Image 1 (cartoon, helix red, strand yellow):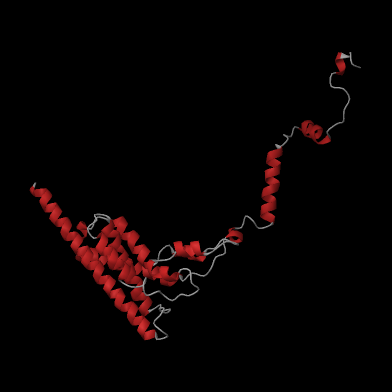
Image 2 (image 1 turned 180 degrees about the vertical axis):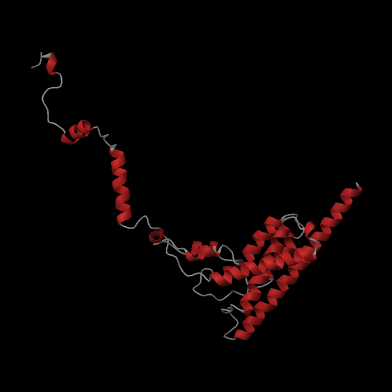
Length: 236
């Protein structure tokens, strides 16, 4: 009745689930939590939570890439040992340049977003010798990138720079490792040189030796300039 103060809530229907939860002392779950659980269960049942649903891994030449990195590091250690290691202070630029020249971030080459273009991963995971054919469906190397041309130009431009010259020296070291191993053990062809494997191998080996010599000369010039600068500072 409208005037009955004891009938404040009026008549209604019983919520059996809430009544049972309250009677048994169970805490009712938040609707948002229930929705989130159902949504995660839906994603899991349909495979959306599996990384391979989004990233389709392709084959990676793991052994050649690792050997190129190891070869570059060995060359770097030998050059540092030959030219007084205490004077080669820019270790981070050296290693970064060596990685870019030898194998790059090669694990990225095996990734591709399902339904999306693969070229961003190919580009990001390629070393400098591979950039010339990063967008092509071939493992052959472009002679403009797989040669001493680009590191030689960079050496001319950046040899006088205090930090960047070490990155270029590391780049030459890494490319020397990449080209020497590609020309001797892991040859897969060179564009525009025909079908002659001998010509392609010779081209890669020759440019690998040139990159090695360029790295040595650049490191020697840099250590000598550091020695001169240190001597002048001590005299002052």
